[in-house]
Image 1: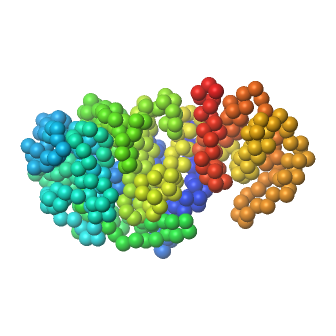
Image 2 (image 1 turned 90 degrees about the horizontal axis):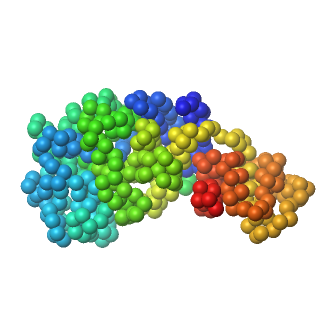
Image 3 (image 1 turned 45 degrees about the vertical axis):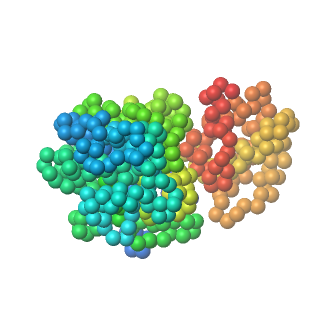
Length: 493
């Protein structure tokens, strides 16, 4: 695999993606086999001082930290200190009032305990110790979002459905504290038994991202987070997660990539091969923050995709997760299980738009970068095919389609007509315009016996999926039909 070609593609596309999404800074790590083979950083870790984002910049992982908690408790399972199907009420007085059976560790790791969706129980001050925090949360018996008005604390019976729960993973963290033979805190256990064996020297999983809990050297390397809206970047006050085993870790993309590679490679010394395999293979139906989804499975913490289509691609199964830390950071993880390739992306941006949507800018930046790496994983060249004229070329393809195949018209516009359109175009400032590329693309579209298939083949030949996706967003047509991404060809249409 040509790692230099991937690096060249990232250097070409990522600054453009960041500009489009309003992302202040972004850091990337790609691992293959057992090694991190490529790191890149772009933009700024702090806009006020001009401090650049570097590959050593530390940022909150948000919910990507749940996998650390999962590994920690699975180590205790391997040591016979708790069973995956043991009722947790033997250790903690937690009972789902809807029944029909006790909650098990397996239920917590697959988000099927019956606990409803919650946002992490954040506050403006660092939380109390985990035991006290959870006692308060379960005594109150209500979700945090909008004071409990958005979702129920207990959403249904144990095992009935996927419900993403930060409280549930905080309970897992408390089990790690209670059951580890050393009698150390959750944070100390993860440091000694997960981070240290994997050489994750830039990672810490504190109770709070605060000088009282994070070494000064690491805290000094943390990026400044920005809450964003179009045209706005707001440095909001620091918040602290009460459910901290669900998402308060700090790390670098390189460190997190080493962690993912360890799981893809059979445990990497922190888990046995069998347990690592369970963690990254489907254990139950999964879902998203908004609820269950038929298209997603869950291993232990990780979402599992079979590679049957979509951005994962045929024959390339992968695991994934992501994270947010309010209000200013986003994190993205993907690991291709058979290829043994890990991708981690960190950005100091969290968009203030609609809750939980993967299309908002802070998510879209990482997803657009992930498409570049996905193309490379699939063995194709991810470098740009239309260096300066991509927008003009796609506008031409759209125009050619609208003048012919969309309406079933067989008469194609003449070269003179296309030249007249291109020369008469009124183009907004800052939009690159190439009349030649526009006319060439528009002239390539024609009515055939199979216009949908042939149009899709034309687009796929000229514009790789990741380049097409960025161009569609820049032109304001992100919902362009699936046939333009080749879905029709793959279905044999």
